[in-house]
Amino acid sequence: MTPQDIILIGCPVDSGKRSRGCLMGPDAYRTAGLAEAMVDLGHRVTDMGNLAPASVPAPKTALAHLHALAETIGWTQSIAQAAEGAMARGLPIFMGGDHSLSLGSVAGVAAHAAAQGRPQFVLWLDAHSDYHTPQSSVSGHLHGTPLAYVTGRKGFDGFPTLLAPIPQQNICIIGLRSVDPAERSALEESTIHRHDMREIDETGIARPLGVFLDRVAAAGGALHVSLDVDFIDPAAAPGVVTTVPGGATVREAHLVMEMLHDTGLMTSLDLVELNPFLDDRGRTAQLMVDLAASALGRRVFDRQTRAYG
Image 1 (cartoon, rainbow, N blue to C red):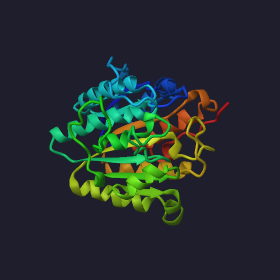
Image 2: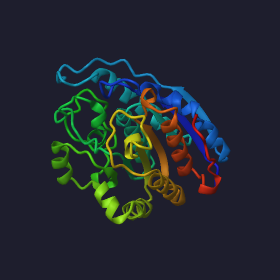
Image 3: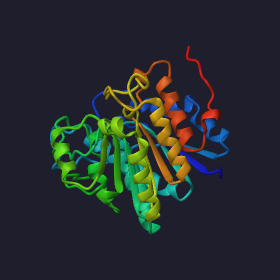
Image 4: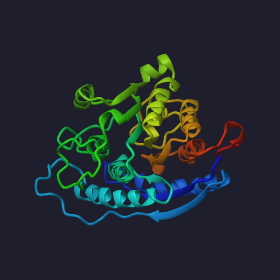
């Protein structure tokens, strides 16, 4: 395995929804040994510490129901800048923080890919599609909007200008099991590749993932992976607000990560929606660290057995 430069970027974003706790995520990953896991695999690690949101005003046209709009715009600006810069130095891991951090992380890595003349692809591992616009979101929670923003859907007034919108066909969502009607309609009109848990139950998780990874490889693309805690079944990963029963098993999640490592295609990674306040003795944080390690080279026989308590 070729050692890589891993850039850890703390994104304590807690503005994407009203429930609090995700701001503790970056330090939970540090406590669970993310940096040490990368070093043990032979990688070089730089921890950039935690980012802060840029100070920006809310747009005058802001819809009243949107939660913490100005703060989320500020986070998008600071994370996008950090992401674009980090891509020139190695493989960034964005330690979240709720999923609104991906408004910035995906925009930033896509800008870097465009400057390099490479197509950007996104693998979205999530129970939700996060394809709302600010107008279609009934809750006003902006953690449900990243894929709409990065594909260039309208309605994101005040957000940074998107330098490199991602073609819909370059996105693959795996793990869907909770999609609002407005999102379902928009997805059905799009060319986004999407695979719900019924399909995973029927065909297995390797088949749709393998098809998508082959597409990325054929295009010579950069691949951003966004791993939401709620991709995994809450029985194994309880530390998340948006629990939806029937998610991926631990073994399925590790298979996804191991396939990513086998292809060597992943160029950046989000770890999002961890809420340590809701976790059980750190088990969700530890699982997410183990999954990141699988994506970066840890094999089954190298994985230590841990006891909680």
